[in-house]
Length: 322
Ligand SMILES: Cc1cc2nc3c(=O)[nH]c(=O)nc-3n(C[C@H](O)[C@H](O)[C@H](O)COP(=O)(O)O)c2cc1C
Ligand SMILES: Nc1ncnc2c1ncn2[C@@H]1O[C@H](COP(=O)(O)OP(=O)(O)O)[C@@H](O)[C@H]1O
Image 1 (cartoon, protein in one colour):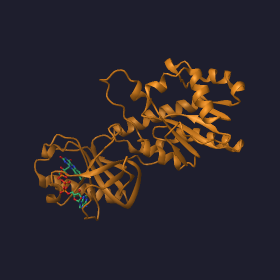
Image 2: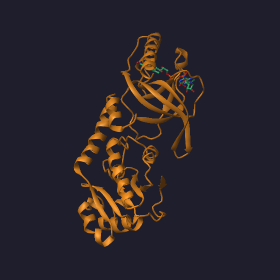
Image 3: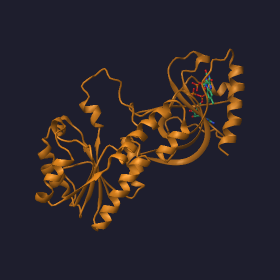
Image 4: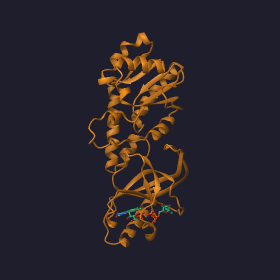
């Protein structure tokens, strides 16, 4: 898959089948659209093209500055990785700016879609809106089919409902530790990445060193506080803009997300104890696959009691991850 980030420097696409969307999470609902896109491209012996926006349009258009920042299931690089797995030919990442959003719907069709992609087929949700004040829709695209020599195809309501329901379901499931439902909708184990940073150096004193993870992307959704059994990969980014994670080794472990009431730290931390492992990995990137929710975090009277509980967590995790 080729990824394009400069929309003024795009190749000439061949008989392109094009679809437009945010594809947050690239979940099973999105895969239906991607499969339809690939089928259309095949029929016309052409290339499949996904157009997506970065940052998320809602981050640019949202007027209320006090609104909590949106929680996304995937960062751009994760989304890119997941779409690449589907063997789409091109992913075009359009920098979403106010200027871009202010194009009229007609300009969006003629200057953006037609001029830059020369599409054979455009696949679009029945309720998709574009252009300033959201005046462009499926009907308008239909109106210009002949003039610009493309065919527009609709993603029907039931498919889109499924996509919306899936996204919401995944978010709420992750926010209450229901990983089974999240996985069912996503089609994969939810994952996130963080850099290993310094903690309080207490972990090693109770026999459970924990790599403390700092999440760079503030919009990435982090699951509900609690203790989890996880698998993880240790690695790094191939580019220093935080894109393209490259794993170097895979491991099993357990994770604590929360405020650690026992040590009254109050900051929210994310930390993993890696099984059968003893290397120094400060500064490395860890990708955690969140597998099983074990329990809520608890306040223990002593560190000894906490240690005993973590031992029980380890036994349980090792069993679940077998
Ligand atoms: C599997 C696991 C379970 C944990 N459960 C709790 C808990 O229930 N309550 C709590 O206060 N801290 C819990 N912790 C966090 C520990 O308090 C923390 O790892 C320890 O204080 C070391 O912190 P440090 O890495 O900053 O040195 C847990 C950690 C792990 C790895
Ligand atoms: N099994 C392990 N799991 C997690 N981290 C480990 C492990 N073995 C060694 N380490 C290293 O030890 C560090 C964690 O030790 P810890 O005493 O908890 O210190 P900190 O409070 O800085 O996290 C990790 O960042 C990592 O570099």
